[in-house]
Image (cartoon, rainbow, N blue to C red; front, side):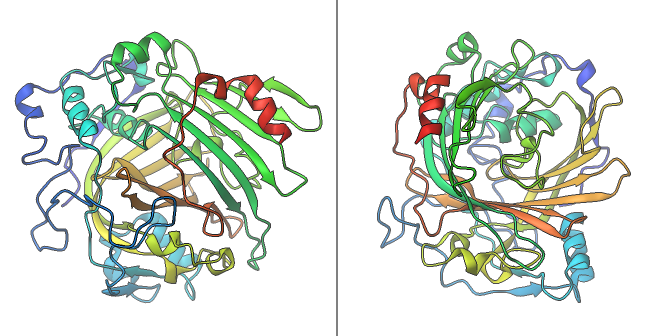
Length: 451
């Protein structure tokens, strides 16, 4: 695929409700398009195969609650991209990947494997996506959703923000909990692991949820996180209530400080505020590759392109891999990373003249099969490429859902990086957990911080 000619610009100032697609267009879902809107057919040369349903059952040997068996363990590396041959493949590499080859020419590489279109979701998500296609709209200014629930709101997107909202509210189960590690290595590879407990209650994707339910609450999800180690940070906690229409009511956030032993409102937990214990290597809205209100940028849908992105990273997710095997100087261990050729939507965000953010420009590469951001580029106010992000995905086939096992952000100025998602020496994410609204109150945050 080549980039769509004539990029579609999308300025927030003039944005109202966008026209929904017709029933005839929606009927392409499940036929020429996958149930969530990707092109079902493969590409012309066969390097991207047809989508045939993704992973529909767990492979032999998988035990619920254990790390996931790699369904593609027998696949071999087809070829390796290095600094020496990157120019040969540059039409399918992001600017960020090319920058990493330049920054770390002796060690950074990309092992490319057979493309496996493994993404899959429950049938009720597919059904809700088709319903959404003919009814979902953006709220005024593009800062929220109307008439959408459970499924992807815009499977046949008309502009950049519809693509981004597909990512923001994408299915990740109904609830999830995990113990997860974050590392911010120094240049020599030494690091201190920061461990978190994350709890997520996804109101938007709960089976049976109606658009009117979400609009009445004006809520998408609840998120609670607290640091469990090291001791100097343990107990620091964060609570977020993510609103559906952030014009009506912005994100609500609270923090618990162990020194003061009190919960405080935290209106600045958004945009470019520093990420928790990130050593200044990511912003709050870098979490999950992008989150929060989009109102500080003008958005452009550049088009769709074939690119090499991290995919099916079961080796990086494996329970027999140690954190020291993953964390290396300059970047994570490239021998544990799998890249595949996939079609991605390319979206560009440029900072509006009357707003501020550390990043003047951002570029996002969104996997068509999962609506998940797979790679990002962040530019500073001098228009220099500053940070490069990549999301390493696997299919958690017990649901099923395509989601991250690790996010990595490279800071090209400091020569350092942040890796979030280390769970190999602990346990994988638990999708079976259930929560109540009481689990996401300021009082619950205080209890979590005191553990």
